[in-house]
Length: 440
Image (cartoon, rainbow, N blue to C red; front, side, top):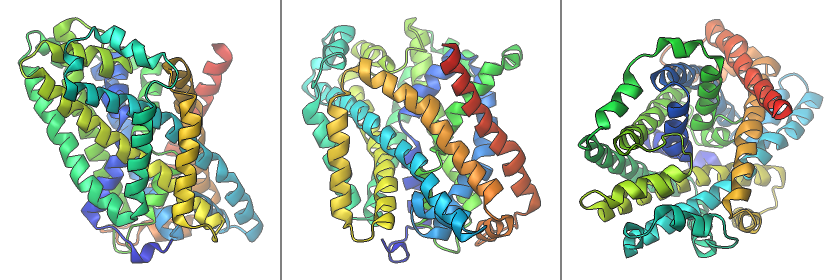
Protein backbone atom coordinates (compact mmCIF):
# COMPACT_ATOMS: atom_id res chain seq x y z
CA UNK A 1 0.00 0.00 0.00
CA UNK A 2 1.28 3.46 -0.80
CA UNK A 3 0.69 5.37 2.41
CA UNK A 4 2.24 8.59 1.13
CA UNK A 5 -0.76 9.05 -1.14
CA UNK A 6 -3.22 8.24 1.60
CA UNK A 7 -2.13 10.14 4.72
CA UNK A 8 -4.55 11.17 7.43
CA UNK A 9 -5.01 14.68 8.80
CA UNK A 10 -3.67 15.26 12.31
CA UNK A 11 -7.04 15.21 14.08
CA UNK A 12 -8.33 12.49 11.80
CA UNK A 13 -5.34 10.40 12.80
CA UNK A 14 -5.82 11.12 16.51
CA UNK A 15 -9.51 10.19 16.36
CA UNK A 16 -8.67 6.99 14.46
CA UNK A 17 -5.95 6.08 16.96
CA UNK A 18 -8.29 6.84 19.86
CA UNK A 19 -10.92 4.75 18.12
CA UNK A 20 -8.49 1.85 18.01
CA UNK A 21 -7.58 2.28 21.67
CA UNK A 22 -11.10 2.91 23.02
CA UNK A 23 -13.14 -0.23 23.39
CA UNK A 24 -14.01 -2.97 25.84
CA UNK A 25 -10.83 -2.29 27.81
CA UNK A 26 -12.24 1.15 28.64
CA UNK A 27 -15.90 0.39 29.13
CA UNK A 28 -15.84 -2.67 31.33
CA UNK A 29 -12.14 -3.47 31.83
CA UNK A 30 -11.20 -0.15 33.42
CA UNK A 31 -14.22 0.19 35.77
CA UNK A 32 -14.03 -3.51 36.75
CA UNK A 33 -10.32 -3.38 37.60
CA UNK A 34 -10.73 -0.05 39.33
CA UNK A 35 -13.47 -1.59 41.43
CA UNK A 36 -11.42 -4.68 42.27
CA UNK A 37 -8.05 -3.02 42.89
CA UNK A 38 -8.41 -0.06 45.19
CA UNK A 39 -10.52 2.50 43.36
CA UNK A 40 -8.58 5.75 43.48
CA UNK A 41 -5.31 3.88 44.17
CA UNK A 42 -5.72 1.96 40.92
CA UNK A 43 -6.49 5.25 39.14
CA UNK A 44 -3.25 6.83 40.41
CA UNK A 45 -1.16 3.88 39.26
CA UNK A 46 -3.00 3.70 35.95
CA UNK A 47 -2.42 7.39 35.18
CA UNK A 48 1.29 6.97 35.90
CA UNK A 49 1.61 4.09 33.44
CA UNK A 50 -0.50 5.79 30.77
CA UNK A 51 1.78 8.84 30.94
CA UNK A 52 4.88 6.65 30.69
CA UNK A 53 3.64 4.36 27.94
CA UNK A 54 2.28 7.15 25.76
CA UNK A 55 5.45 9.25 26.11
CA UNK A 56 7.84 6.50 25.04
CA UNK A 57 6.03 3.29 24.04
CA UNK A 58 3.18 4.59 21.90
CA UNK A 59 5.29 7.35 20.35
CA UNK A 60 7.97 4.79 19.44
CA UNK A 61 5.40 2.57 17.69
CA UNK A 62 4.07 5.57 15.74
CA UNK A 63 7.63 6.56 14.77
CA UNK A 64 8.57 3.01 13.72
CA UNK A 65 5.48 2.78 11.49
CA UNK A 66 6.12 6.17 9.91
CA UNK A 67 9.77 5.28 9.28
CA UNK A 68 8.95 2.02 7.49
CA UNK A 69 5.70 3.18 5.80
CA UNK A 70 4.28 -0.29 6.36
CA UNK A 71 2.96 -2.55 9.10
CA UNK A 72 4.36 -4.94 11.67
CA UNK A 73 6.56 -7.29 9.62
CA UNK A 74 8.29 -4.60 7.57
CA UNK A 75 8.74 -2.37 10.60
CA UNK A 76 10.49 -5.05 12.65
CA UNK A 77 12.65 -5.98 9.69
CA UNK A 78 13.77 -2.39 9.11
CA UNK A 79 14.34 -1.71 12.81
CA UNK A 80 16.53 -4.78 13.26
CA UNK A 81 18.27 -4.14 9.94
CA UNK A 82 19.88 -1.04 11.46
CA UNK A 83 22.33 -3.58 12.94
CA UNK A 84 22.79 -5.81 9.90
CA UNK A 85 20.93 -7.39 7.01
CA UNK A 86 20.92 -10.76 8.80
CA UNK A 87 19.44 -9.13 11.91
CA UNK A 88 16.81 -7.55 9.68
CA UNK A 89 15.67 -10.96 8.46
CA UNK A 90 15.53 -12.18 12.06
CA UNK A 91 13.46 -9.15 13.07
CA UNK A 92 11.04 -9.72 10.20
CA UNK A 93 10.53 -13.30 11.36
CA UNK A 94 10.07 -12.22 14.99
CA UNK A 95 7.40 -9.74 13.93
CA UNK A 96 5.03 -12.62 13.17
CA UNK A 97 4.49 -13.13 16.94
CA UNK A 98 2.93 -9.73 17.79
CA UNK A 99 1.15 -9.81 14.43
CA UNK A 100 -0.45 -13.15 15.32
CA UNK A 101 -1.47 -11.53 18.59
CA UNK A 102 -3.41 -8.86 16.69
CA UNK A 103 -5.30 -11.53 14.77
CA UNK A 104 -6.05 -13.50 17.94
CA UNK A 105 -7.42 -10.37 19.57
CA UNK A 106 -9.56 -9.64 16.49
CA UNK A 107 -11.12 -13.12 16.51
CA UNK A 108 -12.29 -12.83 20.10
CA UNK A 109 -13.11 -9.15 19.87
CA UNK A 110 -15.52 -9.65 16.97
CA UNK A 111 -17.55 -12.04 19.12
CA UNK A 112 -18.08 -9.58 21.96
CA UNK A 113 -19.00 -6.80 19.52
CA UNK A 114 -21.61 -9.23 18.16
CA UNK A 115 -23.03 -9.48 21.70
CA UNK A 116 -23.13 -5.69 21.86
CA UNK A 117 -24.91 -5.45 18.50
CA UNK A 118 -27.47 -8.02 19.67
CA UNK A 119 -28.07 -5.90 22.77
CA UNK A 120 -28.51 -2.85 20.54
CA UNK A 121 -31.09 -4.71 18.43
CA UNK A 122 -33.04 -5.80 21.52
CA UNK A 123 -32.90 -2.22 22.80
CA UNK A 124 -34.57 -1.02 19.61
CA UNK A 125 -37.28 -3.70 19.77
CA UNK A 126 -37.81 -2.97 23.48
CA UNK A 127 -37.25 -6.59 24.52
CA UNK A 128 -34.29 -5.62 26.69
CA UNK A 129 -36.50 -3.39 28.81
CA UNK A 130 -38.73 -6.24 30.01
CA UNK A 131 -36.56 -9.34 30.39
CA UNK A 132 -34.69 -10.81 33.32
CA UNK A 133 -31.28 -9.58 32.16
CA UNK A 134 -29.40 -12.52 33.68
CA UNK A 135 -31.57 -15.06 31.86
CA UNK A 136 -31.45 -12.97 28.68
CA UNK A 137 -27.64 -12.79 28.68
CA UNK A 138 -27.24 -16.49 29.44
CA UNK A 139 -29.63 -17.36 26.60
CA UNK A 140 -27.05 -16.36 23.99
CA UNK A 141 -23.73 -16.14 25.85
CA UNK A 142 -23.77 -19.85 26.72
CA UNK A 143 -25.31 -21.12 23.48
CA UNK A 144 -23.44 -22.11 20.33
CA UNK A 145 -24.04 -20.07 17.14
CA UNK A 146 -26.44 -17.72 18.93
CA UNK A 147 -25.24 -14.42 17.41
CA UNK A 148 -24.25 -15.52 13.90
CA UNK A 149 -26.18 -12.78 12.00
CA UNK A 150 -24.73 -10.08 14.25
CA UNK A 151 -21.27 -11.60 13.94
CA UNK A 152 -21.51 -11.43 10.14
CA UNK A 153 -22.71 -7.81 10.24
CA UNK A 154 -19.82 -6.74 12.50
CA UNK A 155 -17.17 -8.29 10.26
CA UNK A 156 -18.74 -7.07 7.01
CA UNK A 157 -19.13 -3.48 8.26
CA UNK A 158 -15.52 -3.47 9.48
CA UNK A 159 -14.30 -4.75 6.11
CA UNK A 160 -16.34 -2.21 4.15
CA UNK A 161 -14.80 0.70 6.06
CA UNK A 162 -11.32 -0.74 5.54
CA UNK A 163 -11.68 -1.48 1.84
CA UNK A 164 -11.97 2.24 1.16
CA UNK A 165 -8.56 2.86 2.77
CA UNK A 166 -7.16 5.26 5.34
CA UNK A 167 -9.54 8.09 4.47
CA UNK A 168 -12.49 5.81 5.17
CA UNK A 169 -11.04 4.90 8.58
CA UNK A 170 -10.56 8.60 9.28
CA UNK A 171 -14.06 9.58 8.17
CA UNK A 172 -15.80 6.79 10.10
CA UNK A 173 -13.93 7.67 13.29
CA UNK A 174 -14.69 11.38 12.88
CA UNK A 175 -18.32 10.35 13.43
CA UNK A 176 -17.97 7.36 15.76
CA UNK A 177 -15.58 8.79 18.35
CA UNK A 178 -17.36 12.10 19.04
CA UNK A 179 -20.61 10.11 19.20
CA UNK A 180 -19.05 7.75 21.76
CA UNK A 181 -18.04 10.64 24.03
CA UNK A 182 -21.36 12.46 23.71
CA UNK A 183 -23.42 9.36 24.51
CA UNK A 184 -21.38 8.41 27.56
CA UNK A 185 -21.42 12.00 28.83
CA UNK A 186 -25.23 11.97 28.59
CA UNK A 187 -25.34 8.68 30.51
CA UNK A 188 -22.88 10.02 33.11
CA UNK A 189 -25.09 13.06 33.73
CA UNK A 190 -28.14 10.82 34.12
CA UNK A 191 -26.35 8.48 36.55
CA UNK A 192 -25.24 11.46 38.65
CA UNK A 193 -28.85 11.96 39.75
CA UNK A 194 -29.27 8.40 41.04
CA UNK A 195 -29.56 8.14 44.85
CA UNK A 196 -26.33 6.71 46.24
CA UNK A 197 -24.20 7.69 43.24
CA UNK A 198 -22.06 9.94 45.45
CA UNK A 199 -20.57 6.87 47.13
CA UNK A 200 -19.25 5.80 43.75
CA UNK A 201 -17.57 9.15 43.22
CA UNK A 202 -15.94 8.95 46.65
CA UNK A 203 -14.69 5.46 45.86
CA UNK A 204 -13.19 6.69 42.60
CA UNK A 205 -11.55 9.90 43.74
CA UNK A 206 -10.84 9.76 47.48
CA UNK A 207 -7.14 8.85 47.85
CA UNK A 208 -6.49 5.45 49.44
CA UNK A 209 -2.75 5.61 49.92
CA UNK A 210 -2.48 2.29 51.77
CA UNK A 211 -3.77 0.43 48.73
CA UNK A 212 -0.76 1.66 46.75
CA UNK A 213 1.40 -0.63 48.89
CA UNK A 214 -0.20 -3.63 47.20
CA UNK A 215 2.05 -4.59 44.22
CA UNK A 216 -0.86 -6.18 42.38
CA UNK A 217 -2.57 -2.78 42.15
CA UNK A 218 0.44 -1.59 40.15
CA UNK A 219 0.65 -4.77 38.06
CA UNK A 220 -3.02 -4.70 37.05
CA UNK A 221 -2.88 -0.96 36.38
CA UNK A 222 0.15 -1.53 34.17
CA UNK A 223 -1.57 -4.31 32.22
CA UNK A 224 -4.69 -2.19 31.80
CA UNK A 225 -2.59 0.70 30.45
CA UNK A 226 -0.91 -1.55 27.85
CA UNK A 227 -4.27 -2.98 26.77
CA UNK A 228 -6.13 0.33 26.76
CA UNK A 229 -3.53 2.18 24.68
CA UNK A 230 -3.20 -0.77 22.27
CA UNK A 231 0.56 -0.82 22.82
CA UNK A 232 0.97 -4.41 21.69
CA UNK A 233 4.04 -4.25 19.47
CA UNK A 234 1.80 -4.40 16.39
CA UNK A 235 -1.49 -2.49 16.10
CA UNK A 236 -0.39 1.12 16.44
CA UNK A 237 2.60 0.65 14.12
CA UNK A 238 0.36 0.52 11.06
CA UNK A 239 -1.38 3.76 12.06
CA UNK A 240 2.03 5.40 12.38
CA UNK A 241 2.56 4.58 8.70
CA UNK A 242 -0.21 7.08 7.88
CA UNK A 243 1.55 9.99 9.63
CA UNK A 244 3.24 12.77 7.68
CA UNK A 245 6.89 13.68 8.19
CA UNK A 246 6.03 17.01 9.84
CA UNK A 247 3.88 15.51 12.60
CA UNK A 248 5.20 15.42 16.19
CA UNK A 249 4.75 11.75 17.11
CA UNK A 250 5.34 12.26 20.84
CA UNK A 251 2.75 15.02 20.97
CA UNK A 252 0.25 12.94 19.01
CA UNK A 253 0.88 9.89 21.25
CA UNK A 254 0.21 11.99 24.35
CA UNK A 255 -3.00 13.36 22.83
CA UNK A 256 -4.13 9.85 21.94
CA UNK A 257 -3.54 8.76 25.54
CA UNK A 258 -5.36 11.82 26.88
CA UNK A 259 -8.55 11.12 24.92
CA UNK A 260 -8.33 7.40 25.63
CA UNK A 261 -8.05 8.12 29.37
CA UNK A 262 -10.98 10.53 29.22
CA UNK A 263 -13.02 7.77 27.56
CA UNK A 264 -12.10 5.32 30.34
CA UNK A 265 -12.98 7.86 33.06
CA UNK A 266 -16.29 8.79 31.43
CA UNK A 267 -17.20 5.09 31.21
CA UNK A 268 -16.24 4.67 34.87
CA UNK A 269 -18.37 7.71 35.78
CA UNK A 270 -21.33 5.86 34.29
CA UNK A 271 -20.70 2.37 35.62
CA UNK A 272 -19.16 2.75 39.09
CA UNK A 273 -21.66 5.28 40.57
CA UNK A 274 -24.53 3.30 39.03
CA UNK A 275 -23.28 0.09 40.64
CA UNK A 276 -23.03 1.82 44.02
CA UNK A 277 -26.49 3.30 43.61
CA UNK A 278 -28.01 -0.13 42.92
CA UNK A 279 -25.78 -2.15 45.25
CA UNK A 280 -24.30 -4.14 42.35
CA UNK A 281 -20.86 -5.69 41.85
CA UNK A 282 -18.60 -3.19 40.08
CA UNK A 283 -16.08 -5.93 39.28
CA UNK A 284 -18.53 -8.07 37.34
CA UNK A 285 -16.63 -7.92 34.00
CA UNK A 286 -18.55 -8.53 30.73
CA UNK A 287 -21.86 -8.84 32.53
CA UNK A 288 -21.60 -5.12 33.41
CA UNK A 289 -22.72 -4.39 29.86
CA UNK A 290 -25.29 -7.14 29.51
CA UNK A 291 -26.76 -7.68 32.99
CA UNK A 292 -25.96 -4.78 35.31
CA UNK A 293 -26.43 -1.78 33.04
CA UNK A 294 -29.60 -3.10 31.34
CA UNK A 295 -31.09 -3.69 34.80
CA UNK A 296 -30.35 -0.07 35.70
CA UNK A 297 -31.73 1.19 32.39
CA UNK A 298 -34.95 -0.73 32.99
CA UNK A 299 -35.55 1.32 36.14
CA UNK A 300 -34.94 4.86 34.89
CA UNK A 301 -37.14 7.17 32.77
CA UNK A 302 -36.40 6.92 29.04
CA UNK A 303 -34.33 3.84 29.78
CA UNK A 304 -34.88 2.43 26.30
CA UNK A 305 -33.49 5.60 24.71
CA UNK A 306 -30.44 5.47 26.95
CA UNK A 307 -29.99 1.76 26.18
CA UNK A 308 -29.98 2.48 22.44
CA UNK A 309 -27.43 5.25 22.99
CA UNK A 310 -25.24 3.00 25.12
CA UNK A 311 -25.04 0.11 22.68
CA UNK A 312 -24.62 2.38 19.66
CA UNK A 313 -21.60 3.90 21.41
CA UNK A 314 -20.19 0.50 22.28
CA UNK A 315 -20.68 -0.80 18.73
CA UNK A 316 -18.86 2.24 17.36
CA UNK A 317 -15.97 1.81 19.79
CA UNK A 318 -15.70 -1.92 19.09
CA UNK A 319 -15.68 -1.58 15.30
CA UNK A 320 -13.05 1.17 15.54
CA UNK A 321 -10.79 -1.19 17.48
CA UNK A 322 -11.46 -4.06 15.09
CA UNK A 323 -10.52 -1.81 12.15
CA UNK A 324 -7.05 -1.40 13.60
CA UNK A 325 -6.52 -5.12 14.18
CA UNK A 326 -7.54 -6.03 10.63
CA UNK A 327 -5.49 -3.19 9.18
CA UNK A 328 -2.37 -4.24 11.10
CA UNK A 329 -2.56 -7.82 9.86
CA UNK A 330 -3.69 -6.97 6.33
CA UNK A 331 -0.99 -4.38 5.70
CA UNK A 332 1.75 -6.72 6.95
CA UNK A 333 0.57 -9.56 4.74
CA UNK A 334 0.57 -7.22 1.75
CA UNK A 335 4.12 -6.18 2.58
CA UNK A 336 5.28 -9.77 2.90
CA UNK A 337 3.37 -10.99 -0.17
CA UNK A 338 3.25 -7.99 -2.57
CA UNK A 339 1.21 -9.81 -5.22
CA UNK A 340 -1.75 -10.07 -2.88
CA UNK A 341 -4.52 -7.55 -3.48
CA UNK A 342 -5.81 -5.54 -0.52
CA UNK A 343 -9.41 -6.65 -1.07
CA UNK A 344 -8.43 -10.31 -1.19
CA UNK A 345 -6.34 -10.01 1.98
CA UNK A 346 -9.09 -8.29 3.94
CA UNK A 347 -11.77 -10.73 2.78
CA UNK A 348 -9.51 -13.62 3.79
CA UNK A 349 -9.05 -12.09 7.24
CA UNK A 350 -12.80 -11.64 7.53
CA UNK A 351 -13.41 -15.30 6.66
CA UNK A 352 -10.80 -16.42 9.21
CA UNK A 353 -12.31 -14.16 11.86
CA UNK A 354 -15.81 -15.49 11.20
CA UNK A 355 -14.72 -19.12 10.92
CA UNK A 356 -12.79 -19.25 14.18
CA UNK A 357 -15.16 -16.85 15.91
CA UNK A 358 -18.22 -18.99 15.25
CA UNK A 359 -16.76 -21.70 17.46
CA UNK A 360 -15.98 -19.18 20.17
CA UNK A 361 -19.38 -17.58 20.58
CA UNK A 362 -20.32 -19.16 23.94
CA UNK A 363 -18.70 -17.07 26.65
CA UNK A 364 -17.24 -20.16 28.33
CA UNK A 365 -15.05 -20.42 25.22
CA UNK A 366 -14.69 -16.74 24.44
CA UNK A 367 -13.76 -15.76 28.00
CA UNK A 368 -10.69 -18.05 28.36
CA UNK A 369 -9.55 -17.09 24.85
CA UNK A 370 -9.61 -13.36 25.62
CA UNK A 371 -8.05 -13.95 29.05
CA UNK A 372 -5.15 -15.74 27.35
CA UNK A 373 -4.84 -12.91 24.83
CA UNK A 374 -4.82 -10.14 27.44
CA UNK A 375 -2.66 -11.95 30.01
CA UNK A 376 -0.07 -13.53 27.69
CA UNK A 377 -0.21 -12.35 24.07
CA UNK A 378 -0.47 -8.60 24.65
CA UNK A 379 2.39 -8.44 27.22
CA UNK A 380 4.52 -10.66 24.97
CA UNK A 381 3.95 -8.44 21.94
CA UNK A 382 4.58 -5.28 23.94
CA UNK A 383 7.83 -6.77 25.30
CA UNK A 384 9.08 -7.85 21.86
CA UNK A 385 8.34 -4.37 20.54
CA UNK A 386 9.95 -2.57 23.48
CA UNK A 387 13.13 -4.61 23.23
CA UNK A 388 13.26 -4.11 19.46
CA UNK A 389 12.94 -0.31 19.56
CA UNK A 390 15.07 0.48 22.60
CA UNK A 391 17.70 -2.27 22.67
CA UNK A 392 18.05 -3.65 19.13
CA UNK A 393 17.43 -0.69 16.85
CA UNK A 394 20.25 1.85 16.64
CA UNK A 395 19.57 4.71 19.02
CA UNK A 396 20.45 7.48 16.55
CA UNK A 397 18.05 6.18 13.89
CA UNK A 398 15.17 5.91 16.35
CA UNK A 399 15.80 9.41 17.70
CA UNK A 400 16.05 10.80 14.18
CA UNK A 401 12.54 9.54 13.43
CA UNK A 402 11.16 10.64 16.81
CA UNK A 403 12.45 14.18 16.27
CA UNK A 404 11.00 14.66 12.78
CA UNK A 405 8.37 17.34 13.19
CA UNK A 406 9.02 17.57 16.93
CA UNK A 407 8.63 20.98 18.59
CA UNK A 408 11.31 20.07 21.14
CA UNK A 409 14.20 17.66 20.66
CA UNK A 410 14.04 14.26 22.38
CA UNK A 411 17.43 12.78 23.08
CA UNK A 412 19.23 10.71 25.68
CA UNK A 413 16.62 11.25 28.42
CA UNK A 414 13.71 10.07 26.24
CA UNK A 415 15.66 7.03 25.06
CA UNK A 416 16.79 6.12 28.60
CA UNK A 417 13.22 6.36 29.89
CA UNK A 418 12.26 3.87 27.19
CA UNK A 419 15.22 1.59 27.75
CA UNK A 420 15.38 1.54 31.55
CA UNK A 421 11.76 2.15 32.61
CA UNK A 422 9.39 1.22 29.79
CA UNK A 423 11.18 -2.01 28.77
CA UNK A 424 11.39 -3.31 32.39
CA UNK A 425 7.65 -2.66 32.80
CA UNK A 426 6.90 -4.82 29.76
CA UNK A 427 9.24 -7.55 31.04
CA UNK A 428 7.68 -7.48 34.51
CA UNK A 429 4.21 -7.87 33.03
CA UNK A 430 5.38 -10.89 31.02
CA UNK A 431 6.99 -12.48 34.08
CA UNK A 432 3.89 -11.90 36.20
CA UNK A 433 1.75 -13.51 33.48
CA UNK A 434 4.04 -16.56 33.42
CA UNK A 435 4.01 -16.77 37.21
CA UNK A 436 0.22 -16.63 37.28
CA UNK A 437 0.05 -19.49 34.78
CA UNK A 438 2.45 -21.63 36.85
CA UNK A 439 0.83 -20.76 40.16
CA UNK A 440 -2.79 -21.08 39.11
